[in-house]
Length: 52
Length: 382
Image (cartoon, helix red, strand yellow):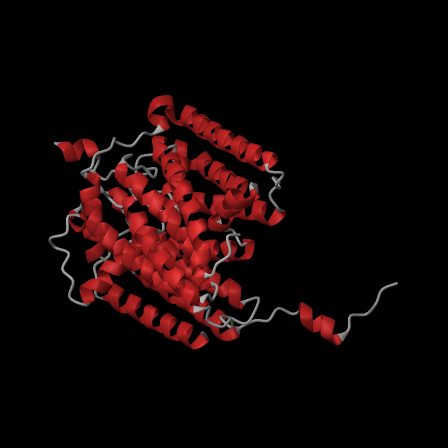
């Protein structure tokens, strides 16, 4: 199990670093709730908006 | 008369540090913090470090929503449940008024309808089969449980599937979020939130008394509730929204799927502004991913600081199957139900949002079914 953990840790960290260096990032971390019209932590719209 | 400690007793008191994993987890945190600091994101660094602290506290306090709910259902034991309510009461003290009064801050809100109820119910089944909820999965993965690695993988897969189904479930209807602060103001809203927690605590105590079970939380649970409650406030201060876990899993899963050729450009969920931005940006720009990663590393450091890391053998196949099924159900349920115990229940109630209590009332019967199903997978009901 230790070997599995070592492999997962190294692979995940490498993937995160590569992904970060190849992706845009803003001035501060954001949550989907930061965006206009978000009605839930995942950014889903409100039912009243969906009905329109 | 004092007795000198024997060499073996002295050796037993020395913590069994697992240096390779202690160094690896600390180094990994340092790398991630360095990346976001170089990008000029101190708030992201704070979220990583707070996640690290959460992972360590959860592991050391063995704070488990899944086990405490199971104890409440099976034995009527209310200690862990009351600890969870204390945690929420502490977090609410900052979240309800600040979300209402300070521009840029917001609570965890969600619409109330079939999607929330179905999602929470399915999540409840999954958390008992997996033996851990969102936060539980993170800190046990970090703590060296290979079984929970499997749960995490299926949790991620389930949440991506859930993201594809959520828009259809939202079309079933529902009402807009109900926030107590909108009706009673920031301080009245806080009073109403605390009153709702007090009612829940009284019900928990009544259940325990009727079944002759224990009520008083142990010092470990009280310490965990206070520490995690304060860390929730710190996460709220850094991220401007209450702590959430499962959206990060959805983003990770979608990014992995994209690597293998999946196209989300026609998926309604991934066209909403928040998810679309998260899919395109670095995962170190997403608040829930930051605390999730920190939490895994924090639990790993805490586990490696006290015992040899990940030395347990793999569990039986049936148990692994339960871990996979539970993870899949939790992932799907979390997306439809707007989060897990942390994002929906803790975050929702601590924000004074009615959906938090609706989530709890829907997840509880799911837990009861999950507990009944546990023996099928060779797991005990307790």
